[in-house]
Amino acid sequence: MSDGYRRIVVDGLWTNNQALVALLGLCPLLAVSNTLINGLGLGLATTAVLALSNVSVSIIRNWVRPEIRLPVFVLIIASFVTTVELVMNAYFHGLYKVLGIFIPLIVTNCAIIGRAEAFASRNAVPRALVDGLSIGIGFTLALVVLGGSRELIGQGTLFDGAHLMFGEFARDWRWTIDDEYPGILLAVLPPGAFMGLGMMIALKNIIDKRFGQRKAAVVTTTEPVATSS
Image 1 (cartoon, rainbow, N blue to C red):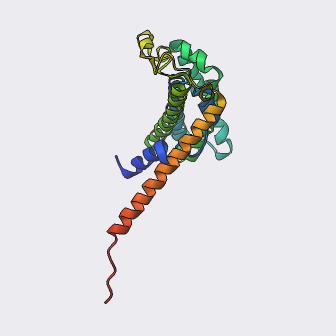
Image 2: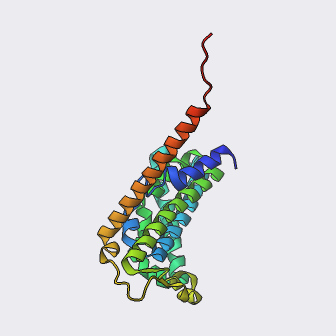
Image 3: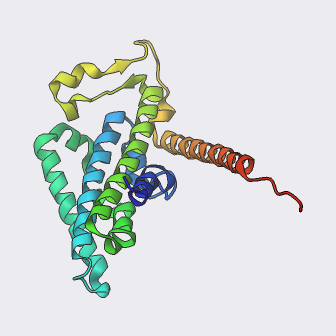
């Protein structure tokens, strides 16, 4: 992988993570991340729309006049959101009912229109595809971590409702800490989502700071010592 594509992937997954850095798409992220499976379902749907819309915008970028580019981008995104919604209704009906209104609301996710405008409309198809997948997977990972944490603390379970996405054989995937675990209601409620996201952002900033300090120390120790003539 070239440095250009590697930078796109790192930006999408970590450096410019849309949920933890850009703070975009927070409404669905906070609303449906009460379980790991709900977060994974919405994340994969968002990733599919991001990748497909990025590719489409990149293909037509030289044929659309600047004055009408945003309405055209929104129309493309809405088309793919409708397609994803119909596919989920047909093949993942249980998960479709759980996620509800937040599937069609993907079209209002600022991260999707933002990537179409800032990246896909200015880059070739391969780079636009990699950007869409990277941004989508980074957003999905944030949803999964937040959803898994809230489910574990709030209900004492993981993979609750896995059969809604993976079929009946996944019904036994549900893992429980303890049958007598009372759960913490705050983690399941919306305030718990805000607190969980805040802690994830703080943890990311701590990791970035320590990585930056370590990198600076390595650069300092490898610099040649100046000698006087």
